Image (cartoon, rainbow, N blue to C red):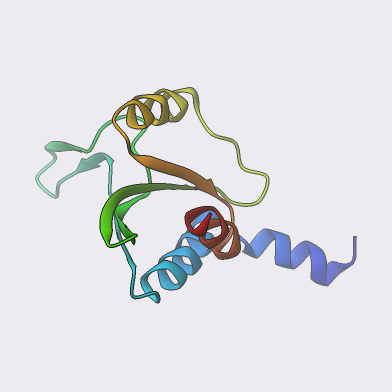
Length: 116
């Protein structure tokens, strides 16, 4: 692998992929997504705050299809990243409730899945 390729692979973090997906999806008039922050955070005074839930997707939002808004969820992975068991569990539950949930490792992948 050439040095430029290696550096490009290293720079393609989940954070970078997430930003590209957010910009691409929100650049369309028929879709809107928002970052869903989850995890455990420590406040300045030492207390802990738990936000969200285990297995939560990175983005939630909606897509207008045939004039009807549909709830969508996007799990972002860096290229080659793997989905965790709790994320699989959440996706199964979401599907049972009619939620369109996708896993994307690029903006192109996200748009392709959402538009099909």
